[in-house]
Image 1 (spheres, helix red, strand yellow):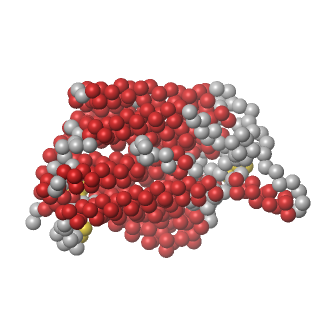
Image 2 (cartoon, helix red, strand yellow):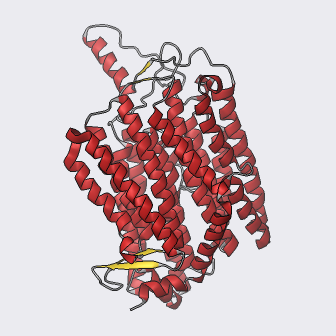
Length: 552
């Protein structure tokens, strides 16, 4: 069974080579390889999750023992994260295939999409399975390279700007990470998690606290917690819908996973617990207030993402069995639901021609299936019973009440307020985009949506023939159509597309699959709660992980 541990990393990397070799000439083969490999990764992840319930699994690549070899470890937490992440990435891939085929995006950027996406999946799996700090860093860098490619597909101006911001922030965090690894190795002679768990006890409190603070800063940037989250609302919304969905759903949770792993395995005792609770409260309140102020759906969802990361940090800051278990439940829930909401945002953009809520309306009547696909995850993220969002929030609040400290009680109140404001936000989206009458400026079926680059090209052509080069703009300087709708680029490559009354069935099916996955957490709530409780106990005990990695 241990031989299966490296496969979630190796299979996508192998498929990347095949996909690049196939290129644009063999589009169907490229799509088949991507779907087949991700399906295989889902199956392997489920097997690993079940097997890890009997104890951690590990493999030393090249049969080199720590600290020389590369160690990959699958325990309950990493098995669960692999299963959820691979399921979500498969659904997003199918969604992107439907969008690419519908837009007839057969140019080079789409040929690059599959290899970049597979590398991203491999990087995510590498971070979940990494048994040492160095390979955790390698997983981050794999994700960074592929993320920049995916963020800038099509080479449009907004995407290049957003991608540049993302890369600068990511490189800054990588530099801090490298310095932390260097200090760790200098102080202990190893970067293997199991060995560090034993050797950190012999270090001075100052050195250990410094390493812990540096790692939390790195993972906080990745997770987009306040006050290092300002980059996210400007980076994610410009990307294509499937890219934004997988970034929002998964990449931020990689940071949360790393917090869970290091705070329980390397830094027991919760020395910085109060600091994490303060950060959690600030992320919740400031994030949701930012969402309240937004009128663009993608930016609104980006701020709710920041806000709800606070729930997970809340559980990590409590650092007890109930808090860690609640945090894991909420991570699983949020990966799926946040991904679903961004996929729905892509469908709304395709149907209405924009994600600006003031220019949308009437979709409850004109697109009832799309309305249902939004309503279910919206109620889920708002924490309405009996959805998994309610289960996760209730678990975290109960853990806060059981903790009994003043700060924990403040977090319980902040969690309640954030949940109520989240409900207000999703109700606002429902009222504006779905419930009210369709505004006169909303794009009709068959309207060709232009990108800003298309519009600039038109202006250049007019200038060449001596005509006017004037583009109507709204009060924010965004180009608009004569009917009042915003000029947008909705295709994967940034090309102009045509709005459709009925979105492609493949996109609808993929979105519906993520909705069903989110609902399955409610149906299987007892099993999920029991599994996360055992996972939390294993994380806090530490002994099973250490013994598995260091056994002869």
